[in-house]
Amino acid sequence: MLKQDGPVRTKRVREARDDAKKEIADYKASKEEEFKKFQAEHSRGNQQAEEEASKEADKEIKNIREAGSRGQEGVVKSLLSAVFEVHPVAPEKA
Image (cartoon, rainbow, N blue to C red; front, side, top):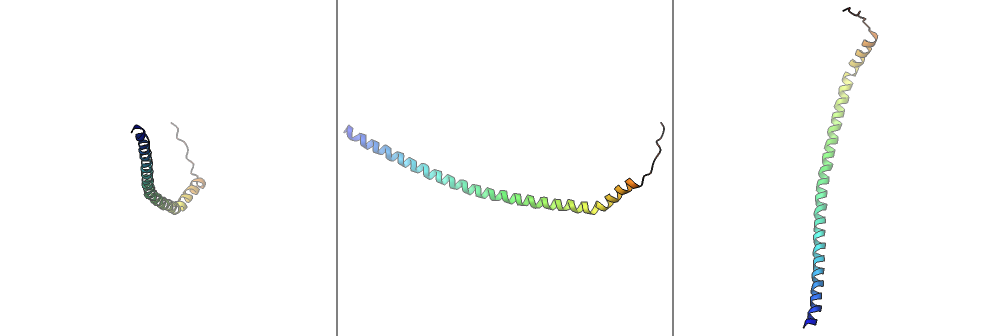
């Protein structure tokens, strides 16, 4: 009887090991699928956030350029006036 238990026990151990390997492979596959879903959802969110930030930045750049264009003529006149219209002032003696 002892000799028969050996092969049966070895067979059971092999079956248990094979079952464990299959369970591990199934668990790993399900976790990989969960990760892919998570990654797809979050990368989509990041992409949307990047697009919104880019649109906002473009809008701000446009506003800055428009403000510069509106005031550009006045600034140029002021600079030219300061350079060409010199009004010397004598220093006061203390």
